Image 1 (cartoon, rainbow, N blue to C red):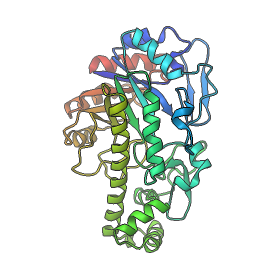
Image 2 (image 1 turned 90 degrees about the vertical axis):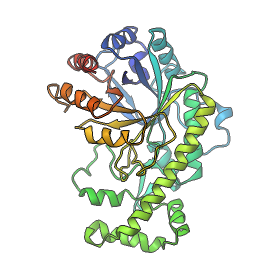
Image 3 (image 1 turned 90 degrees about the horizontal axis):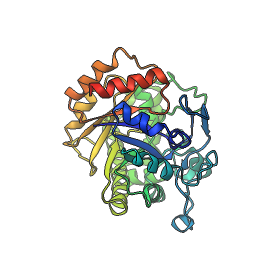
Image 4 (image 1 turned 45 degrees about the horizontal axis):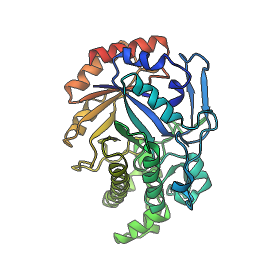
Length: 366
């Protein structure tokens, strides 16, 4: 199987899009239903070239009865005229015989993190990561579960693809980001440990002194030689427990709301990974139907490690710059040999004509 990622605006207003995707050899479109802010190119669209989505939005109707009385509520995308962009785009794709996977980004929301900094991830210097909602808070877990349910409400999706189903960390490709190269991998790891009030309470429940932990983390970001590996292991265990609680909450809600849908989790075999593909706890197979693993560079080892969970693995490959078109077909073959069961291509709408041909060639190789 071959899937490809797309945004609703790639489909809406372009009647040729579904047939063009089907002709690439793609059978499933992973279509954004709830997505973070983005400035996206639309090089093949007949009436636009750029979509500027300045904040995270739910590309479905935000139903007042579902969200009534809640503080964390998704926003509607005012940059699109359709009242149900995902629903309309999904219907057009299905009419062309394509399967549809609802792509739902859960904890990555700069708008909500800015409005509600008390539920955002906080580093050991007390600096909030406003783009990252921390799932240690029950309110965030409830929001994520309802967001997933409302993203698929009334659409009967073939799949649901869960991105950011866990904690985001220090790395974030924000507007004019000036943090690249500032920290070593270990320093970035330490700055990605959430120190919000809910996470500190979880540490205290393990018998740790939160103030002492924070002080040690601060020292360690300067001098990595003073890292207490035992303490770090405890903090990582807390993160994994919180991620598991989030995942269980979201998956249980989806199993009830969309019982037919296959659920795919964006994940990384590196237990310390944060971001859109959070790290998996070693030896734990999440209660989902498949894993999507980033293979934007190499990826064979990550695929092999992910298949050890016993779950099917999607190899996530981008054809956009700086991907090397000459190298990609060989990599795709190696990913399949490493155990990947599906190729997931990025991105059906962002790719210009020459990269569209590359999408087709990779689907043919698969």
